[in-house]
Image 1 (cartoon, rainbow, N blue to C red):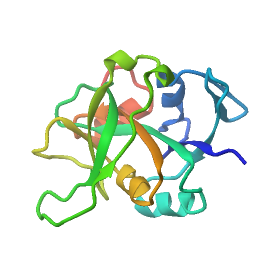
Image 2: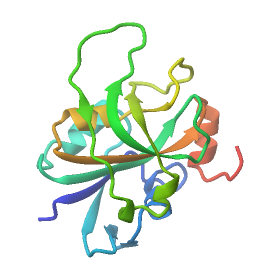
Image 3: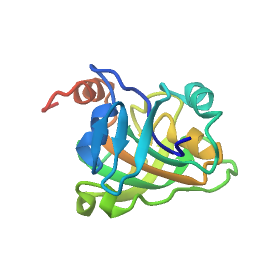
Length: 181
């Protein structure tokens, strides 16, 4: 059984993240699997958006599996199209403070990425809904990564591509493949 998985939220042709794999990772897609240059074969798992879909989709994946999460994220100040290597993930709850475990991620090796020199290392905040405003800077916002990390995967890396500056409209345009928002 394969123990390498690329995890995306949406694979659809109109709005989807599967196209990000070929745009940012080294290798090639064959028969709905990703083949890295080193010969490693990665199965693609499409979770769906949000916490419940993530937990349902990944519940049977072994915790020692290697996972790469790649997907879109918003940011208050990073440029649209920026690639972000997530080093830590937290829940987004700006109105209250409570203790949570530290959820640190592994850094995806540079040889796995097409333009590793252009990647920003940053924190990701996961939210239960689309983030339309925030005072947080130098970070990205998504709706899945904290839930993936909280499930206890030992080998988790994540690359987020900034799709918008906290605008649902811009996200939809970028995710659908529009060159200019």
